[in-house]
Image (cartoon, rainbow, N blue to C red):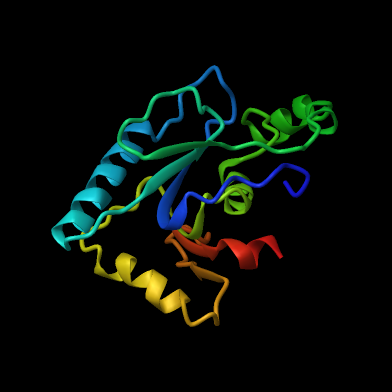
Amino acid sequence: NASLPPEPVRGPFGVCYVAFAGDHERRYRGERLLEIAARQARAAAAARGATLQQCVLTDQPERLRPYVDLIVPLRTHLDAAPYTALCAEYSRRFGRGCRLLFGYMAKAIAVLRAPYELTAFLDTDTFVCDAAPLLALPRLMAQGRYDLLLLLPRTGQGWVNSGVLVSRREGVRR
């Protein structure tokens, strides 16, 4: 992603969601959850007397999403040819469709495209009940000791979930 021009800075702090379908023929499967999560986060911030900028980084930027302030295209410079050449073998071995990128990879790319100086990435199934901790992030990160905060709880199935990730734009781009 370093070969792509950076996304312009749109503000000091915001929340972003990653809506990655993997292909343009199917709608992002968590679309309704994304809408509910964004509306709930906005309401929770309003209950604290604050406004909250929100964006979605997506491989389907043409889809209207009036519940967020900004839609950022999720782009990459990757060449699909080496991957698609192995798609039949991948599908046979793993029993699922072949894609250039999977959702967890899309979040890593999205961090580099973040439109805010400080961005809290929330999974689309993360619901903000009280915005106080979220609204405190700019103060916590202002100390300059952290460029990235990541909560990695282990699920019952044994894999790690990166539902909440906070990044400082300048630190990530270094």
